[in-house]
Length: 144
Image (cartoon, rainbow, N blue to C red; front, side):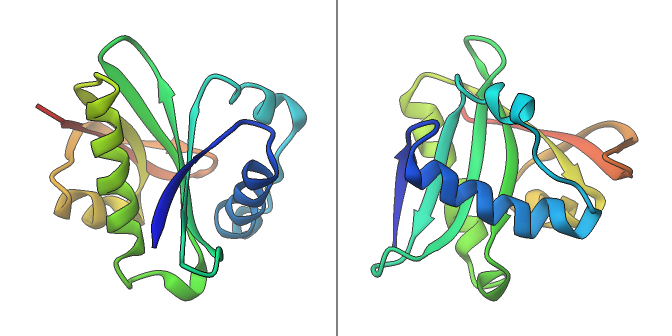
């Protein structure tokens, strides 16, 4: 398995959009709009593939400041969830963030994903809130 940083609007990027739609949007009855995707041009798009080039998972890292990245749109193929793919993807993204000089990753975790991020040493910051109609918590991790 390997991690690939995929260029915005590339065929691999389009493949991550398909996975994100299936895993994150379809269950909520949501779709991506062009304006949503256009706002991702300056983000880091990571894709995690197996040796046959099957997409296992993906995520987006959006620079917030010189020190902070926001992790967004973490999606793992339904057949590969709870197999370590998500953990490997997040850890690889943290290493990439360190190499690029970032010291903090923040994210908005769905209520159901909080235990996953807690196991990876992310801390809850503040109270529960609603986003896209479901409960979330702001979480962050220092990379130092």
